[in-house]
Image (cartoon, rainbow over all chains, first blue to last red; front, side, top):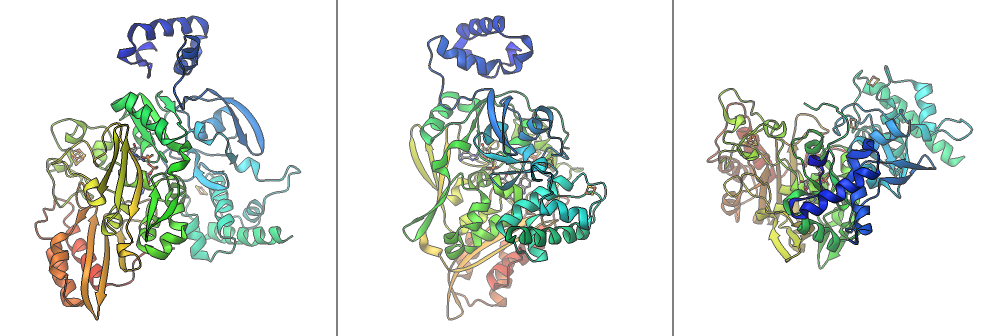
Length: 215
Length: 337
Ligand SMILES: Cc1cc2nc3c(=O)[nH]c(=O)nc-3n(C[C@H](O)[C@H](O)[C@H](O)COP(=O)(O)OP(=O)(O)OC[C@H]3O[C@@H](n4cnc5c(N)ncnc54)[C@H](O)[C@@H]3O)c2cc1C
Ligand code: SF4
Ligand code: FES
Ligand code: FES
C-alpha cells in the first residue's frame, strides 16, 4: 500500500515514511486504502497543521430525512455509498458513467447522477432516494402512485431513476406539456424502450402531483 | 468501453472553502493535482484509470465561484455556475439568449444540473483512442490512432490538425467566442485575462492540453462584454441523438444589421478542430454585404476552404457549409425544449 500512497510526495521523504509506519502500527491493515486521511489528521499530532480543505473519513449524511453516520473513502461515489454502505439498493447502477440515469437521486431537490458525484461533495446537503419518497406511513408519492396506476415500465430497472428525475423536474415545472416533460426527463434511458408509455405514466404523475399539492 | 468496476483508485481529496485555499493547494501539488468542478468529465478519466492524479482539489465548496452577476452592460459568470443555473438566469435570457441555447444543448438534464461552465470550456477531447488510454501523441506517445487507414474518425477534425486530429467537444465554447467573452484565470502568482478565442489551444501549441490552463491555474470567471447584448444570434448543433451526444459540428454567430446590410458579426464553429475555430476570413468577407442567400452561399463556401477531411468525416464539409450558410442567412435555431 505504501507505494500507492497518494499524498506522501518525494519531498516529504523520510518523515512521510516513518509517519506512515507509525500509523500502520496503530490502525488495522484493512483501512490501508485510506491511510492518507489518518496521515493528515496525524499531521497535527506531529505538530503540522492540516491543509485547508482536508476531509475526514467519517461523515454524517442527510439521506431520506435521516442523519446517517458513515465511513466514506475520498474517491467514493454517492451511488456506492447508498447501495453498499447504507443498503439503499433502489438506486441502480447502469453505466457508472453519467450515460443512463438509473442512479438518479435528488440532492437539495435537484436530480443528479449519483454515480458521478463524490459522497464527500454532498455533506450538508439533502439527499433523497427512491426509498425516501413514500410517506412514513407507507403512502406512495404521487409519482410512484402514477407509475402503479399507469404502469409504463417493463423490467423496471430504469424506473427508480425515472421516478426521481420526474419528481425533481416537476418541482421546477409542475404543469409541463408532453414535449417539455420529455425534454425534462431526457437524461434517463430505458433499455426496454417504451418511452411513450413512460411519458404517459409521468404525465399522469404530473397531474397527481399537482392534485396532491393542492390538497 | 465503460466498464463498471469497484470504486476509483485512491486519491487525496481536498474541498477548499475559497479561491485562496484552492490556489494554495494547486500551487503546492502542481501537476499532481486535478481540479474538479462538477466532475462529469473528470470521473471518466479517474474511473477508467487513464489519469491517476495523486490529489483532487474539488471546488464544490468554493461558493464565491458560483453565480451570474451583471457587470457593466455585460455579465460575469462564475466558473462554478452550473449549466442549468446559466440557462435559467434571467440576465442570460435577456441579453445573450444564444448562450442559453448552447448550454441547454449540452449533455443531459442531470449533467447540466451539476456540470459547470468552467468545466464545459475546459473539458478534454472525446477521441476514444485517447480516452481509452492508448499511447497516442496527445497521451505522450508518437502515433495518432485516429489517423491511420483503418481508423474510426467520423467525429474527428477537418481543420488545423497537427499530428493529433481530435476535436474540442464543448457546446458553449463557440458561443462564448462569438460573444467575445474574456476568461479570467488566477494562480498564486496573479490574475490573467484571456480572450475566449485564445483560451483554447491546438496541438501545434501544446498537444497535451486543450486550453491555456497550466498546473496551478484556476479559471475563476467568464466575462461577457455588453457589445453584442440583444444582437441577432444564431446557434445550431448537429448531433446523432438529441440528448447526451456531443456536437458533430456546432455553429454560433452574433450579428448586427442595418437596413438588410450586415454591419458587423462574429462567427465560430466547434467539433471541427482541436480548438473551436473563429471564422475571421468569412467575417471579413460578409461585413458590409446584404444579408441574403447569395452572401450566405459565399460564406458557406469560404468556411470550408482549406478543410482536410479524414477517411470517415467528409460529411463535415457540407455540414459546415450549410450551418455557416444558415448562420449568415438566419433561420430558426434547431434548439427544442
Ligand atoms: C455523457 C456525457 C455527455 C456530454 N455531452 C456534452 C455535450 O453534448 N456538449 C458539451 O458541451 N458537453 C457535454 N458533456 C460535457 C459536460 O457538459 C461537461 O463534462 C461538463 O460541463 C463539464 O463540467 P464539469 O464541471 O462537470 O467538469 P469537470 O469534470 O469538473 O472538469 C472538466 C475539466 O476541466 C477542468 N476544470 C473544471 N473547472 C475548472 C476551473 N474552474 N479551473 C480550471 N480547470 C477547471 C478540470 O480539471 C477537468 O480537467 C458531456 C459529458 C458527459 C459525461
Ligand atoms: S486524434 Fe489526438 S487524441 Fe485521438 S488518437 Fe490521435 S493523437 Fe490521440
Ligand atoms: S449509472 Fe449513473 S448515469 Fe448510469
Ligand atoms: S423498463 Fe426495462 S430498462 Fe426501462
